[in-house]
Image (tube, rainbow, N blue to C red; front, side, top):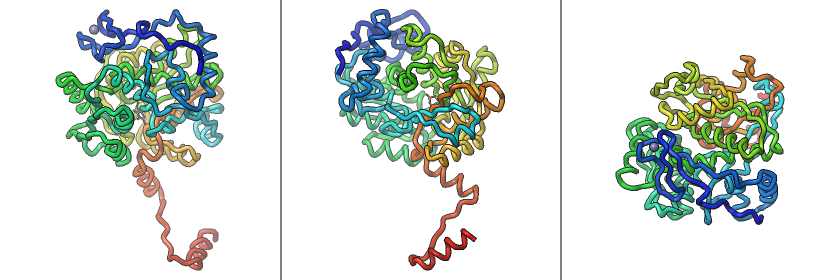
Length: 426
Ligand SMILES: *Cc1c(COP(=O)(O)O)cnc(C)c1O
Ligand SMILES: [Zn+2]
C-alpha cells in the first residue's frame, strides 16, 4: 500500500457536454437536466506526475486488495471511492506474437488481451467503477442494455455488490455464452424484440421513469474505468507512447475513454505526445466510419448487421466524445467485412491467443491499414483484443465447418485409432 492520499471527492465533478452545467460527483445522475451526456472532470493540478508514477509502480507489485486491481491502481485519475466493488480486474497481458506480426505485417505489434478480465471482456474495467458508484449513491437496482458482454459484467459486479440487476438484451442477437453468464450471475434477463439500439433507448427511458441506475457506456463512471486500458498499457510500456492504438468501435465507449485518458496524461505531463487512434468498425455497423469519411460534417445511424455481435450497434451513444478522440489524436476510422473479421479471428485463434469476433476487427483492420500504407510496418502498434474466445464458441464451429473441418469419430479401441492416424500421415 502507498501513502498517496485518494483523490478528494470534491476534486471531481460531472460536466455536461452540451451546456455549461456542472454537478457534484456524488450526484446520482448520468444525464444533464438538458439531456446531454455527463463527463467526469478531475482537478488534476494538485497531482504531481513523478509522485503519481511512483505510486502506480509501487501498487504494481501488490497481489491483494484494491491496489492489485488494474483499474484501482490508477484511482487518483478515476474519482473517490472508499470501498470499490472489485474483482481485481485488468492486469491483462500484452502479447508479442510472431505469427500475428507476420499476418498483419506490423513488425512490432503488441496485443493487449482484455478478454483476460474476470468475466471475459474489458467491460469489467468500466463496471468496477460504475457499480462502485451505484453502491455509493445507494441505487435501488442497476440496469443496462447489452449485446451480451455489458450484461455479463454488470450481472457479476451487481452480485458482488448485492444489488438487484436487470438487463435488456436483443432477442436472438446474443451469443449463448453471454446469455448464460447473465443468467448465471443472477440478473433478471429481459429479451427485447428489437436490436441493441432499441434496447438501449428502452433501458434509458425505464431508468429515468423508475429511478433505476443505468450502467451503459453513457454512464460517465464506466468510461473512467475503461481509461485504465490505456493507463495500464502505457505502464507496461514504461510510459513510452506507441505510434498507434487500434481498437474496435461499437457504442464507442472505449474510443471516448481512450481519448480522455490520453488527454489527462498529456495534461499531467506524463506523456509528451499522443498515439494515433485507429478505430475499426464492421462494414455492416459502420456509422462512425461513414461520418469520418464525411469529415464528421454529419452523422446518420444505420441498421446494424454483423457477425461480430459485440459491435452490432447502429447508433453509437458516444459519437460526440469519440469524434473528439479521433480529432485530437489525428486518428482514423476503418471498416472491415464480416469475412475479414472471421479470417482475422481464425489467425488470432490459431496463434494460441484467441478472441471473440468483435475483437478480431482490430487485427483485420490493422492488416488493412498496413496494406493501405497508412500504418507503417515499423510503427509501434498496440492492438486491443476486447473479448475472450469462449464468448462465442458457435462462431468457431461454424467457421471451421465451412472451411473443411470435420469431427473425427473413432471406435473406442487403439487399433481403430491407429488406423485413422496412419491414414492421415500417408
Ligand atoms: C463492448 C464491446 C466492444 C465495443 O466497444 P465500444 O466501447 O462499445 O465501442 C467491442 N468488443 C467487445 C468484445 C465488446 O464487449
Ligand atoms: Zn446540459
